[in-house]
Image 1 (cartoon, rainbow, N blue to C red):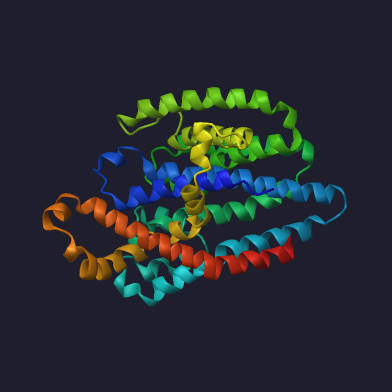
Image 2: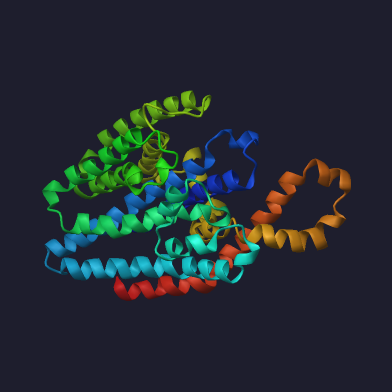
Length: 356
């Protein structure tokens, strides 16, 4: 699948939702929105769309006898590993070295962290665990990467839409069936609808491109209904009939289809997605997601509190402390994530070309 910079902007928006959720207090007016779940589910839908697009490209090569399915699968796993493993395991190394400085249970969680099964760890203990709490979604993504390529590459083309639809229905139904379980959203199965909705859009673009206009109309209608139901559920922070994940996923799917349709346009909404700052944040969003609970607070307390904040007038600082600390942390996080992208991630991204 070709690179679409506007989708990087959507990644940027997703990671900003997550950062706001974690850095601002729960009683902050901006966190009246379920910012964390919104950001994570945007990532899930994007992954479903982009990864399925890649896999369908490989499936076409297999159908033309240019490649065996096992070779295609091997290349896919190698490329995914080169993208996600290096800075993930670097983060785990840092968490191990400085484990006494962070608030998480190393002895209980280390095996889950190493095997990308952290979501099951949180389900087991029925609560979050400090600085590693955000890693559950990366575990879900990795489990999806293990399962979905096998499904796509080894399923007959004519059955693909039914298989993807099964993923969507399973994800939706499991959220309703497990609604009384505290950590239901951390079960892999309850995320299938987000990935599946992204996947079905990729399938439609690959095999039924002539249906794009009518699909966009249905998506627009679905997004409007989902937005209305989302707003209604905000008051009680409950979405009993259509789960929050499904609502956010449908809205995200419409946004993706809108970007694909109008990416050459310069209308006001597309100007947002073409914003260079958002595209930049989207490019380094993986590092920002990984690092945001770890580095900024530690460095901010030592650096800004020692060398910068003492020079800010007391009245201004005391009245705007939350905003000032947020900006300071965001600058640190952006710098660290950019350096990580340039020094580490780009090197491994270059290696991916060997397995194109």
